[in-house]
Image (cartoon, rainbow, N blue to C red; front, side, top):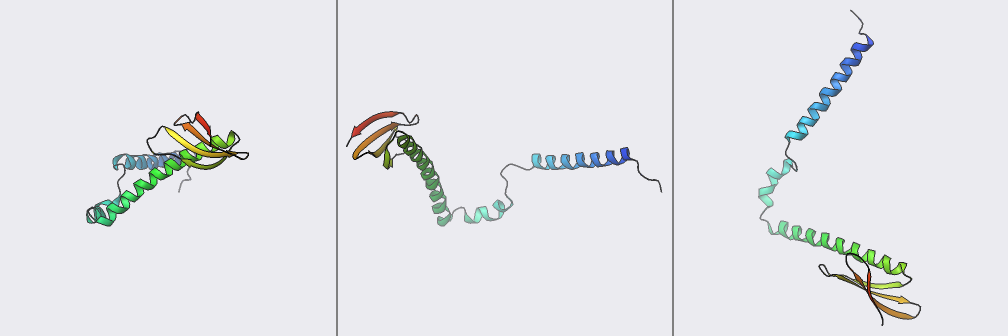
Length: 126
């Protein structure tokens, strides 16, 4: 039996690595994106179920609440960096203003910030 030389062994290993990578990439390209094996089995069963629709709507609302919470948090950070202590932040989706109730010293203030720039529009002593 003849021993393999180093260059032959190197060629065999590199060839097998290339073949493996090619097989993996070909598999990823030919499989449709977002395909889930269980969609075919359970998709039609639960599609018209009221519970499914209720939970689907609940997730959409939760995503919107997370988005508005981030806006309110950023507005609170902006106002607190101006030297105020933030009491309350209100933002309605689609509105161009963020309303902040804050305190500096013993005085209360109502501050309006523009959205999405977070620039101060109005500061009113309350």
